[in-house]
Image 1 (cartoon, rainbow, N blue to C red):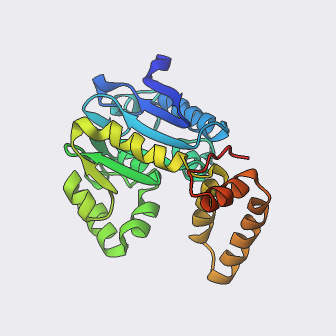
Image 2 (tube, rainbow, N blue to C red; image 1 turned 120 degrees about the vertical axis):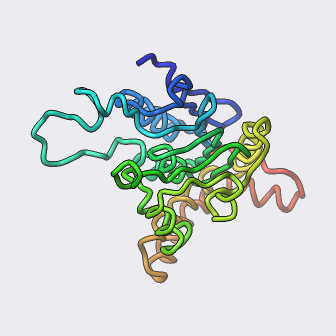
Length: 263
């Protein structure tokens, strides 16, 4: 697989990761999985990156796993080893969920199966008007294998998640917005600008505070309230000692825009 099938670029504290196999609607091969994980880990480790945009080229964001490869002897689903366990720690869904950097999915076209789960794994979803979310798993004889059964009940509640998963329905961008699965729907030509505008708004804030907030949101999904507020306080204490907090307070008193350094 050419390295160019997953593009990586940084500009103004924003990392853009682009699925770049438009000839097959950005379906994911085994090698592409590895490259996507590597790009996400690279962005998360780079202190210059404050927000990540994940998007695709062509008419689809990601049409799922590469079924041609799945059907072959070297495909994702055809490992001939006798393993009885799977190590999923460095696969895109797990890496994406564990990232401290905020993630925006700019859904430029169809997001089906694995592609839909990947979009759901991002913190924020901005959809082009022509984009769709296709929960077609049961129509292919499989389950939402990359996080959909975890994300959907939390995002839209049990009943709506059950309706979407059990029917295998495809939602338009407008329907995705109505269902609470999209933050924003914009004309196709405005998608990348809208994603960058939101990413820039995030990147203008104190990055350590933003990342701590994301960690607390993630932890809070599995904690009771007393434990959670205790952990939030422990996250707050080191922030009191940062240059960014001092800068934020000074900027507020001086009625100016703060200049955060991530320190």
